[in-house]
Length: 205
Image 1 (cartoon, one colour):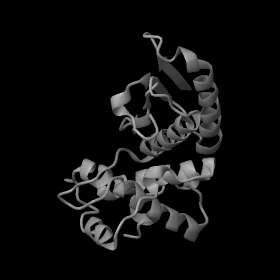
Image 2 (cartoon, one colour):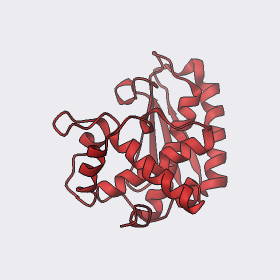
Image 3 (cartoon, one colour):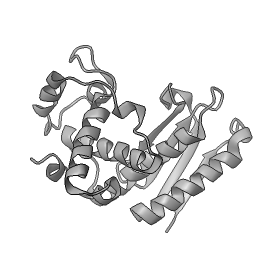
Image 4 (spheres, helix red, strand yellow):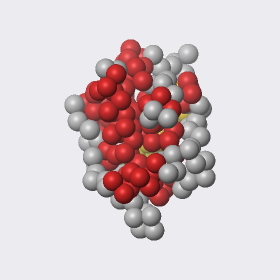
């Protein structure tokens, strides 16, 4: 029963920052244990530039069962340890939610899972992630509301932008964050306390 870190470094690309990476992990692990009560997760950190957010040189993904987290970094480009820390927080929040409620089943689930993880980042770091504060229009929101419970949706369109749908990059993260922030302020609960609250209760549907 543990949170285990696995740094993939056979090519020695991460040699120069291993101590810092381990220090950041220890901080994130302690927080996840104490606040999220998280356990039974393997966390992999690897040099994999194509899976990072270019602006941060870090990116993350959590498996549907909540027991595996993958953090990709661009060690050659260079990345900030703050970005690694907040990415870990984001994915560890996903891990706890997926362990409790299972994988997302529709657009609404996806919006709330991402919104809560963004809110958790903000609560613990003092700043909202860049992908949660883009400009989104009322037309975009109305469009999303028509598809909230659709199981057949293109995640890339809603979260990474679509010219066809006229959706800006990171729309889903921002709209999800706004929904979760409003619910958090209305109920007085932080993201850590909302990790297992069902989607329908947060979006009031």
